[in-house]
Image (tube, rainbow, N blue to C red):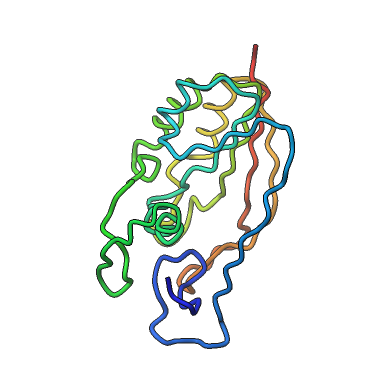
Length: 187
């Protein structure tokens, strides 16, 4: 692991020059002790959904064709400690864990997931980058489609908030919003 934070915020690529004032500091935090039964899984959500009966499901799917595994490979390596071989100028590992939520069938994948869930509430985050100049940044699931899919599961409410978006400088995206969809699931 590098000792200097020479990556952009989401770790997609390394900076070409060392910027010494950006020292990378990694500190472990103390766990919060409580008597609650909390579960965190690292599995395909659509497969996991078939096996669970839970109170709340939080879903933060990929919004566009940019694969999360390409952005967060550094964290994956910290968890798995495989130390994969890195390739290209951006020094990324070979492609793996490619999400169907980043492809044209994302709507079908989300419908499948929501249908399989056995829970009391669903919270799902999404944004409004439908008209981004970069096709790889455009949302894969439309707002109306999200409303339609989630409304079938129960009573839906939608919260929205203006939000600064991450930008490498090539996109001028005004009125960026983040949405929180909350579903009270029908019994």
